[in-house]
Image (tube, rainbow, N blue to C red):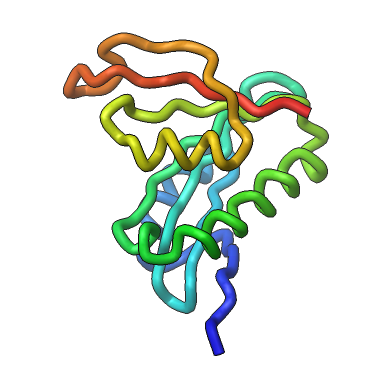
Length: 130
């Protein structure tokens, strides 16, 4: 029987990030068993608006469907629990799997930030609204 993907507020593999994120906002972890698939920072921007910054592990690709479903549940929960009307994020333009994934989650492209990252890669702005 396949193990169900779970969400957790902390995980040993991302504990150092969780500590840093704690002062900035809410941190989330998507894991399968003890294997971390993704971690995210939820940073409030304005009342009703947050920004998600996610780090996906290599293992995420192996569990895309189940992890994706967990991410959709997280997003729905964030909208409801935090009374949001907008969630925004950025994705590196050189990360095609990430670009496809945010579209699959329901995010819509809003624009481009040129030379956004430390290595001067563009970032694509996405948002989902309810």
